[in-house]
Image (cartoon, rainbow, N blue to C red; front, side, top):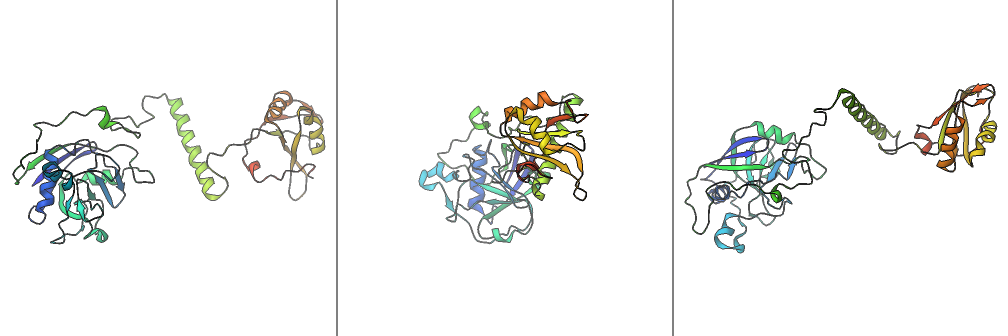
Length: 332
């Protein structure tokens, strides 16, 4: 009447309601004894809702009941036991998944929240977790994609039947030991069960600092995207715009166009000015038609003397020019 389920994130024990759900309990116990659930993936986890497993295809559309082993494909599913009505009233309920036709196979889920009334009468509660409740927190904290698939595999590794009141059916060959996993069973396009996920481990302090800085930069970029200051977080500055600073206050757009225009056609040239006074703030942006011409100007013009000032030239790091800069020359 109880089963120990060992997973990659911890173990838990379930007790089954054999009086209220004899057929569903028998199905689950015999599938566990058959080692059918070994290496089964928790393929769907919805926070504060359910964690679903028991599908060998890992798609949510597969699986079969123990009765398929006994009677063939026509018995792949069996009719759900709806009476008496048992509610999904607490965390840790064990429930068999409805396949859409009020039938059950092998898929089941555990509830991760209380009082999930909308599941009542749709899926069949047939047991509950009685030991190892911390598994619920670990499942609930799993990081998942938009389709509720965990990024790191969480698998059932072993099922051990602790108490089984049902006689073994004829014609079913129950293994004497758990099967060994093969590469096919544990293949995954996601983070494997034993894969190292601590990217900081065994890295030098300098590299860790760089990784942290890169993560912080990505976080800030996503914030700017959310508030509308960036089109998208991965947006990069244009490669055909130069930033020119340390200008003389008397240097104008016309002067810069003449000097930088020898490297190639210029689309825009803007000396940044004080909004109130119109005075030059002594830096400018120059947009070339071709990135190669921009690169040539960068190498040739840095530290050049213009109007008695040695200017500094660099590639623009601003993405504002991608969508806010009016493309016009001779701005004053």
